[in-house]
Image (cartoon, rainbow, N blue to C red; front, side, top):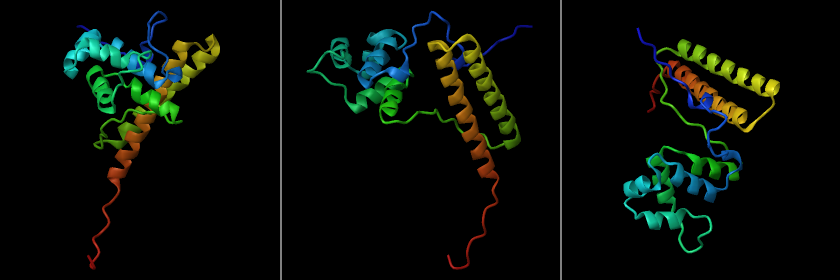
Length: 174
């Protein structure tokens, strides 16, 4: 019998991985890294966007003052790459954080409760590990990722509970 293991992105960072530190990234740097860290590189991204590689390179270059990335292009870059770094950098600049939403599963809110507790426990372990071993960039990214997953699970649980609310009767005056 074979076993497959799924490792959440939040826990999969190795010490030598070149994951950009989103917390300290400017929006322009996020645009650059999104284009260049896209699977297949900027060549694949440019092709999917219907742009020449040279044009996209000019648009994402933080030192270029003549070409600029539009909002629509930034959205396309994130959609095609699967990397939400531009959105995260914009949110951080404005004092917000981005949490990925997941479709609520309302079939069993009790299971959602235990799933949320497991994710909160994972976060608590990651924080404890960071305190014990010293906070590093990777331990911080791990905690950030697990916190996002826990918040998503909390939102999912609340959606499941909300779905259990009885429907109020219609008013006779309607």
